[in-house]
Length: 380
Image (cartoon, rainbow, N blue to C red; front, side, top):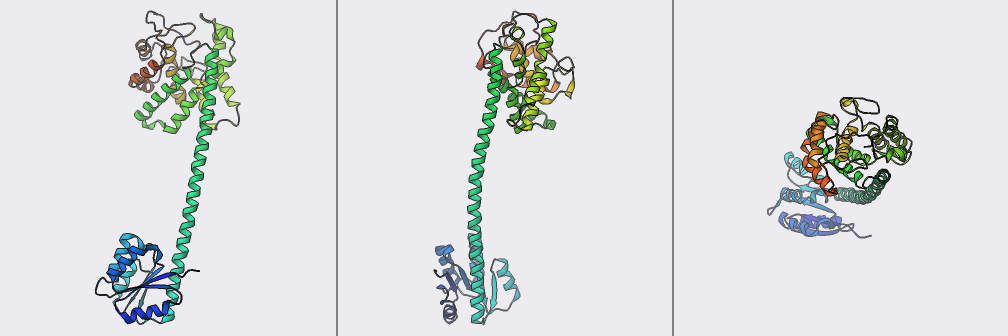
């Protein structure tokens, strides 16, 4: 086993040689005759020094100078320093210990005591280094494992989101809508949710919750899978009986999602269920299926509700042409397409430019402002 290295610093040649004689059997010893030379040795050799036996009183850089330098470089935490001195002032001892010396001995010191204290200091610091190395390795392993888990969690999250998008798209194609409805609703939902979070800080919206709402918005019409084609694809106005059947897609969608186990988290399922069930409710109580009003309607459903209506207005449907973005905007602001929360309506107003950028990105160009009749939301 290789010997540890001890640096002996003393301006007295006899004292220094005596320390060498005491320690050389167990350690490799190197010598310095002053503080300044010791500093150079420490800077050069660094962690290869296992301990330093340091005289306090020297003419060219004393023990305090060496300790101060080691504090500046951080070496005092890596190399144990044992201070030897013939001085008897107690303030010197306290000053050395404050600067990081691990031991302080007054001359003359018995040889056996030098050996024991040097050995103990080396062993303690060696154990400390080994422990720090083990901790560093464990931290590195944990960080790698955490990165792997994060990647896996992200893949699982994206897979679940993709599943939601696919299910939402199935409803769109069956409903003879463009395959972009889900994408637009998700983008609109993110825009208005962020605006709401920024303007109403007491809303409890967070970036993570917004991500959940945006993902869940893709499934807002999943219940339409259960609606017969004769009703879902009817180009004209629905009968009262057909309209009641159409309205049931809200509750049916929520029931479908609530019965899905082992795929989504409870939080995501709850968010999806609220959006499915309540996205046709209106702030004044005029919506369906329950006719609840105000903030009895879950916030996530209110957010998706206004963007779903906007997308229905400015998109072509089997029973209507698309309204222009300007008319669609003013129909919502003027209350012609249902009553929404004043806060959400204000966020919609503030987000107009961003909404229209998204709408234009997917626009088919088939917009018509000649229709005077305000469309109902029987199928949206």
